[in-house]
Image 1 (cartoon, helix red, strand yellow):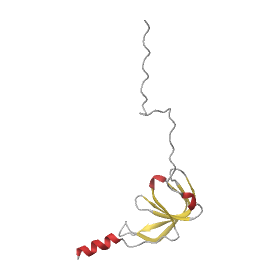
Image 2 (image 1 turned 135 degrees about the vertical axis):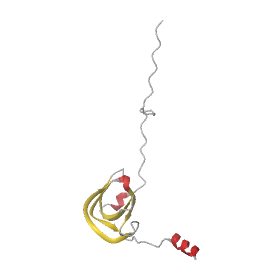
Image 3 (image 1 turned 60 degrees about the vertical axis):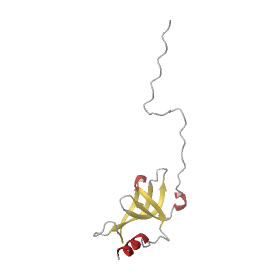
Image 4 (image 1 turned 90 degrees about the vertical axis):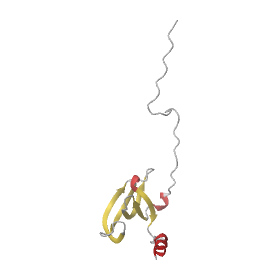
Length: 121
């Protein structure tokens, strides 16, 4: 009698590494913003404006002629129109929450704050 072959040990990754991975296409179409001025809002409230020169699948952004919008010293949630020049920067994709064209962007009043003020009176 011969001994039965030993069973293969399960992989530590928890998945089958033999199957090809399905690559998802990005829902962002950043190519239409290439070489144009964009405004980027980051987690934590930081906002920058610059010319989009490059990006990758992880939404890491390369911005040229970049300026950062300075926060109000009394209210850190409020952004002022004061800027400081940063030059060429790389914004890490994990920090990006919004990418928008700079032209045509304007801030509007928060309609929910107006409703709260009406309810207090």
